[in-house]
Image 1: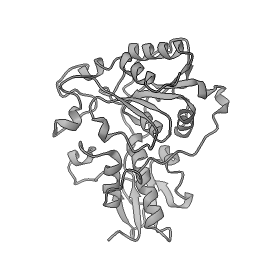
Image 2: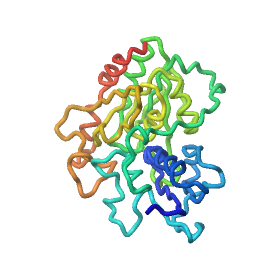
Image 3: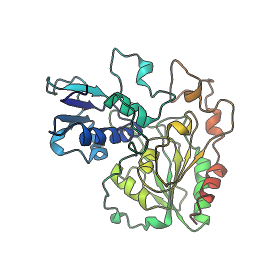
Image 4: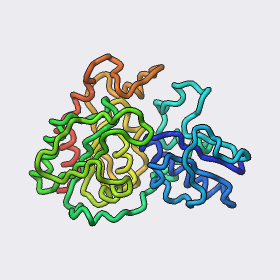
Length: 309
């Protein structure tokens, strides 16, 4: 039986995981908690993902649990210790929304119910950009094995510019929230055209910009999951995880999956590895082949299939 008093402990600083957990939290509020007998605990940097939670029901995540009322049961997004480290990683053959709903609700929600929750619209007029005439390009990534190389990003940008639209560069560099390590940036440099919004937008602003743009281009990572909350077409690269496990239900919104044609593709999904590192190739390559094979022409082909020009 579902606990009457529940703390939903969102013990993650991964933007994609937290966005994928939002539908489960929303479902729980609407179906299980008639008397506000719940608490949502999340790191402060990510409260805007859960804008639908009343302010008196959301608190800062406390790993020690000392600040939580002791008469509430706790449901974690990621199984805490003494669960094994492997169990704490995203299961290889489960969608992010399924993973979140199983851990938080003890059930798997249907895809259409677990559709990503839209962000609250933000005012982006201060940027002085007509985002309806742009293509958003995600340029920074936490994980080295989910990266578009800088020369390929430049080629994509040049093509967008040549087709009469303005490339908009987004992403967050440096340390983010509780992550102790810096993002694995792609070393992309502003080519001298387009609009550089790296390190400038909040999550809500990013979502609003993405909802207005013609298309979003990027790799599987936090910002692409922000794009998945919108109805904007997305061209997304997948290397270590198969797209069927990462793309949420989007209704009629289009998602074009791009992947390198190599035998070791989707190693995280298909190899059933006992230990995983997002920044180390299982084949011990300094620069993973899946990254070097992720070329601009694949993303350009995806953009052309969207009829956005």
